[in-house]
Amino acid sequence: MKVLYATSELAPWVKTGGLAEVAGSLPAALRALGLDVRVLVPAYPELLQSFPDAEEIARPGGLGGLLPTPTLKQALAPDGTPLLLLDYPHYFDRPGNPYLGPEGRDWLDNHLRFGLLSRVAAWLGSEASTLAWQPAIVHCNDWQTGLAASYLRYLPRQRAKSLFTLHNLAFQGLFDHASLFELGLPDEAWRIEGVEYYGYLSFLKAGLQHADAISTVSPTYAMEIQTDAEGMGMAGLLRRRAADLSGILNGIDTTIWNPATDHHLYRTYSARRPDGKATNKAELQVELGLEKREDLPLLGVVSRLTEQKGLDLLLEVAPQLFKLPAQLAVLGTGSHELEMAWAKMGRTHRGQCAVTLGFDEALAHRIEAGADVFVMPSRFEPCGLNQLYSLRYGTPPLVRATGGLADTVIDATDEKRGNGFVFGPATADALLQALQRAITAWHDPKLWRRLQKHGMARDSSWAEAARQYVELYQRL
View 1 (cartoon, rainbow, N blue to C red):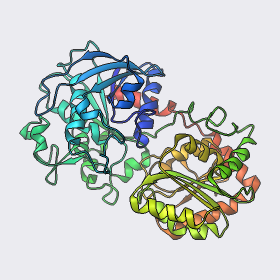
View 2 (cartoon, rainbow, N blue to C red; view 1 turned 180 degrees about the vertical axis):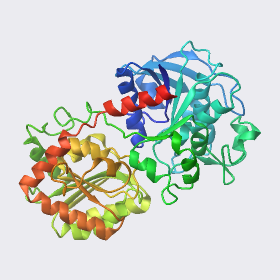
View 3 (spheres, one colour; view 1 turned 180 degrees about the horizontal axis):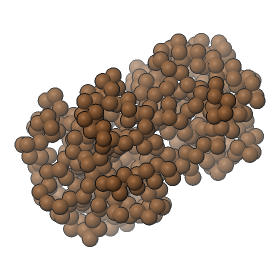
View 4 (cartoon, rainbow, N blue to C red; view 1 turned 90 degrees about the vertical axis):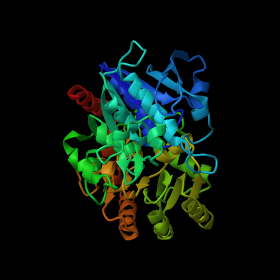
């Protein structure tokens, strides 16, 4: 079976969140099961620099509206996955974040940039394609490729089936009415049964409305988004399409995230030989300027600093956390207000709180390995990957019961399966109580070792998720 996997991000080259990690590992897992999967991604500078010998294979033309004729190049990722690089320098040869300009605001032509990505995905899945390789499935991901499902819906002749995977409902790709013409969509698309959403054109709604099937990244999130409270304006549409909606829990790349082989760590370790974890903690404390204290629990955070991630709640209770006592290591970037507030917290509680603004892949690995507890108090979390990394690294996660966090973290009160700490209400009090429980448990070595063993024994690889995607493709 031939599958086109269309994405706006691809780890390790271009990454703002979990989508890049999934796109960087799921296609390889699908190929391991015998599928012919190729990944379509914009030819950002990082990709062109990594694949200077990428070969031109097509020039998709006549795409409609104001969409230009790009160049399609082919390269081979190190894991053997073929990459289709959508090269149009005027759209994609830009520094930094793929969505934001230097001032931190969306590029004004994002509708054309990702409209082109969507349109070429549909072109590859239609009779218009000039390539001998013809996919049976076009697998779209998040709003940036959601419009591909609409293009396929309005194509007059034979086309591939489409699957739209929703990684985060909060980002919806909203643009004004004029973009309908600029994107080459027919007038009939501007209706409630089409791409129109309260006077805007929504790329995300296009995917939810027109894809042959929809998936999201955890079973619990698939249920949550069908409720008015969590559906972010799309709940009615999702309820109507419930029969076409699946929740498939993400996996992780267990070759990259493996404490026994991770070259970013100070010392490798495993479930059978766990001693190296203490070394990682001690060295991390030194690196971050924390007091070198083995008698204090070290809590870790690697996250976007946003209210979605509940980092405002953690900020509120941090002074009480330090009095328990405990240490905290935070790595992330996000809203300006939270960045400044966390930076101030780090200065005020120097030695107990280390705050690193920005993103550092190697440091993220060392925090996962060196922390005793990993904190994820998210208000909503479609799947979450850091809790899966934490389980694998013997770092019990503390999470709110939402989305994929609820599907993967089992509270310590379950003696046979417990691998972390779970709390309910998205309040500072509930978070603080969970933190107090975790710190009390950390002081019980027998209980703590049991939690670590349960977590490290969990299979978080892509094997099961890839099998479920194959079944979904086959049904389509």
